[in-house]
Amino acid sequence: MRLYWKVVAINGAVLCLALLALVLGPVSVSRRTVASEVLVLALGLAAILLTNALLLRSSLAPVDRVLRAMADVDPTDRRARIPVPRSGPGRRLVEGFNTMLHRLEEEQSASNAKALAAQEAERHRIAQELHDEVGQHLTVVLLGLKQLEGVIPDEQRHEVALLRESARNGLDDVRRVARRLRPGVLEDLGLTSALAALTNDFARHHPAAVQRVIAPGLPGLLQDTELVIYRVAQEALTNTVRHSGAERVTLSLVRVGSHVVLEVTDDGVGFDTTRFGAGVRGMHERSRLVGGDLQIASTPLKGTTVRLAVPCLGDQR
Image (cartoon, rainbow, N blue to C red; front, top):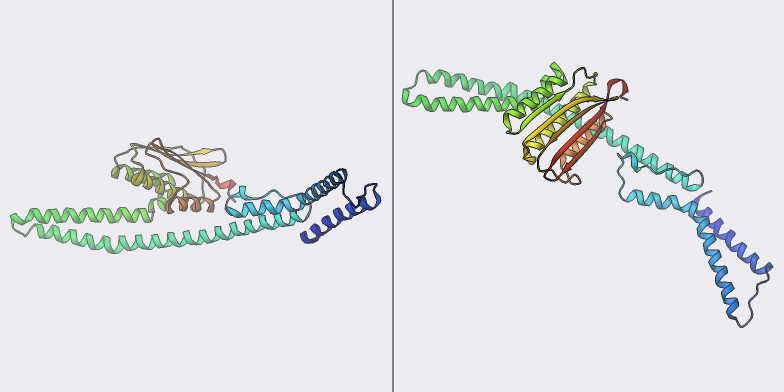
């Protein structure tokens, strides 16, 4: 029975019962209504309204729950699903709403996967161009300056040496940016070595003390999962450099039960976790693609912890 006809039937049944009570019951109303009759009518009306409300509640309550959920629903949040009633037209409404959320979640995950794959491909292309073109041009400039340094007068040799040092620094910067765009060490040597190189690079360019804790004998992970762990660690360290002002940073990678857990902790100024930018949003999207759980906890003036838990290879779906 549709919800419309359900409401019509309930109201019709209540009114029929009220009519039968007036016709068959001992209660009657005189031409001049007295106080006792008014009281009886008021009680009857209250009974009708109460009965109608109780009967309609089971049918319309799911509608209210769906409307409240639609006001601030997050399709990617499993907790947004509404418990399904045992019976009634509200059951179909709630089932349809949960099915819609599930479909939206799948479509959003597929869209995010394509976007992130395109982003990785673009990073790979830019890194390749930086290495093959810009890097080679700077190398030619370095060699030319070195040869020039041997044939120019002594009073100009110092200036050429400064130019050569500047070009060398530029070449180092290009190589560092290329490594950040395309973590070749991740492909060649694995996640542990990639995280070690990432923290070493962080320590060279940031005054904060860096501690790295990587447990031995970690289980194997899918290539996409390793890339997500690396990118989340990279983004967390980048945010630490830009915003935290931390003095100590700790990166750990350990196994906890059936999950591999990455944690990046700092003692910086913290931030409001309800307001975040594209970097944090990207970390959440990446973690969902591999079935991970990303949690960010931050306390003002006490620091921030980024925790990513991903299932081990045998538990990934």
